[in-house]
Length: 282
Image 1 (tube, one colour):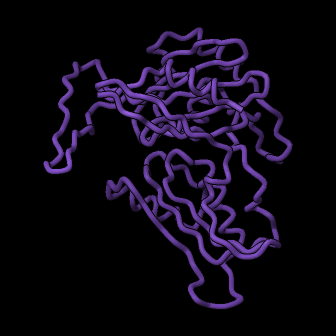
Image 2: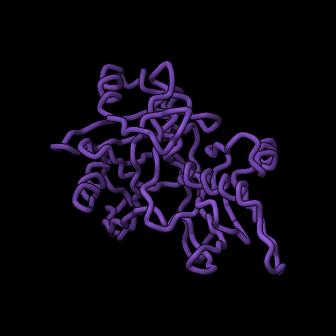
Image 3: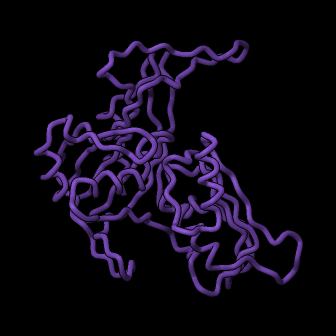
């Protein structure tokens, strides 16, 4: 029986990498990378994705000014189960040969005119940070970064005050923190004990007229946006000129939700997802 599936997609600018003023970053034309990767065989496209396995760009299709991209993470084991309401979960056995992997795909489309990437949000797939690392691995030095396209609310203004921030990292192996971030030691400990997730909250509690260190909070916010595919919860209590409120950081990023029908096996072809993304793109 066909099922209706909702897929969240978010928008990112592809900017030229620079070690200096990030606000001055020019847009990067991802077609320069397409020329490089198209000259590689499928096996040559495989790259290590940090401590979380390997993956590759499996396919590129061009449609006018849009490019459909299918990224695939290559896993050596199956973590898939079938679950019913009244029975215990049953592992889905997938027989693979020594030179085979279990693939988990992430679909994106690239607008070559505006240098915008619309990326499917897929836990365990390619995150924005993973794509940045993957693209840059084809060059001698970094060439680009992905920057979320945000709505008007600015969480990084110098006069903002913060009372609480809560983060849940859903994939510690895919998360790349700022060096010496307040939670970096905890993240390293989570990896050392083979934990998959990590949650933390910093708060001033019930104290009045007291606030968290704004520089530390802004670093955490920046890390959350840079690692969106590896973060499931990112909330902050912030005071600005409009008052005090709780915010879900990711609701501030331009996004859309696709509603598609999966087949009887629960599958949706990557071309189907890409076409829906092009049709919904704005």
